[in-house]
Amino acid sequence: MLAMRENLDFLREIVHRDTHAGVYGGRVATRFPPEPNGFLHIGHAKSICINFGIAAEFGGACHLRFDDTNPETEDMKYVESIRRDVRWLGFDWKENLFFASDYYEQLYEMAVRLIRDGKAYVDSRSDEEIRKGRGTITEPGVHGPYRDRAVEENLDLFARMKAGEFPDGAHVLRAKIDMAARNMKMRDPLLYRIRHATHYRRGDAWCVYPMYDFAHPLSDAIEGITHSICTLEFENNRAIYDWLVDNLFPEPRPRQYEFARLNLDYTVMSKRKLLQLVEEGLVSGWDDPRLPTIAGMRRRGYAPEGIRLFAARIGVDKANSRVSMELLEDAIRDDLNARAPRAMAVLRPLKATITNWPDDRVEKLEIPLWPKDAGKEGTRTVPLAREIRIERTDFSPDPPADWRRLRPGGETRLMGGYFIRCDEVVRDPATGEVLELRCSYDPESLGAPAKGDRKKTTAIQWVSASHAVPAEVRVYDRLFTVADPEDVEEGRTFKEFLNPASVEVLRGCLVEPALASAAPGDRFQFVRHGYFIADEADSRPGAPVFNRIVGLKDKYRPVAP
RNA sequence: UGGGGAGUGGUGAAAUGGUAUCACACGUGGCUCUGACCCACGGUUUCCAGGUUCGAGCCCUGGCUCCCCAGCCA
Image (cartoon, rainbow, N blue to C red):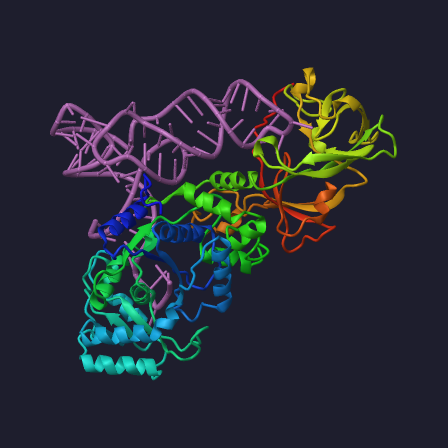
């Protein structure tokens, strides 16, 4: 119970206030209410963290409720993926798994009550006529010809709608509120529509389906939700929420509060756009590691703890905002830094021969899995032999002034091993390309502190050529080239801003032998590169495939020699 | 032009009438067998204009800008 913590966000402040005032007898119940018509993304993760987080902090419960009121778009495969994603994020709804579609009977009865009370009526005009009658932002709507239908007629019509006597669109049930309301949402909102469609859970049992504005508040009330937290675009809908719940439930009843949804730079968050990317094959699927979907981030290697840390860091407020990628990536790194063991991988190999190292000598070095400041134990064995591979970018024939890596005639340490000196650079006589470095090692330097010029160098990663394991490595980058791909001029599409270099597949990579047995899902820090995960789908023992989760920060900016 | 919301360093947030704080990013320096991590230092005066007050990011008045609302989607 963190209720006494200072600097509560506005939602926690409300819950804290209500709890202390005993509004709900001290009870707290929130809910996460997805519609099963798509995959969850990082924006949902924010909402999940808020709803489950508040419930946990105040000793309450958070329900997982599927708001499944539209038979035409919903599917069981989505409820399964949503359940998996919420659980994976680390949250538990316990016995509180609900479906709005289980409330259809109760909801129907409530609609009948409203009709009896003269608060709802059947409108028999076309959608177009209804739209016209609604007026505009500046002009009031007008009363339609069916608005004052007798209660008995309304009851009869609604029952026959339910019985399937009418085709889609023939009638709708509307709340009788105020056609001149300045809030457009209150101009007799639609409560039910006829849909002769098969519902993924209710089959053909129903021909009338409740609208979100009807089903959502009443489902909250049915479940005894106390704080119904949703996003800003529902602010206008709150009036309907209040009207319905006040008309059908006693106090204390649930109340709706709205927060700003998450926007992330260089990606898209709308279900429609995400669906488009998947369906048009612009990404490999819902779990494409470049996508901001939970499934994508899981495949990418983001840990749930890192995502939760991110959610905590961005906080929650009512101001529309756009979060930079760095914030997300730093949270992911921060989490992994303490939990991902270190390993060496050479992504773009350059041959190096230690000329004063005996041909057949192999030295098994025990190298710590963790940097000293991590405070963790454990080592892995890394064989060192005469012929090794180092990173191409760790050698420069003509280095800048602040170069700390290998240079002709210069020394650097093989991480966990010896200092080597680059004695000779072998080039392709035709192209000038560097083919091999001929080096010599200092036998006295193993485990010895660096002195003199050696202090100005850095230790580099390496692998033994004959012991290294070949690996495929996928390096991911932002999916779009512009910060806000949804903000495009008329006539253009977000798809024009897809980043052609959002994934780079490196096939000739070499990793240290210990990594051969990496199990899919294992995460490592490849030193001086970043965090990587053995891909759940494609990695196999002996033939590992790694995804770069996120790179390490790199402040190095070369200065002129 | 109607209604509902929102404006605090580059980004996200805090400060609830009393010295503008934190994280990320950025810059500088330190440390380092990862140019990582870690540590230190640096830049903002709260959308604008008035007003109330000893004192205003917080209160009042008037503007400005942005977002949402006219689906039988949610």
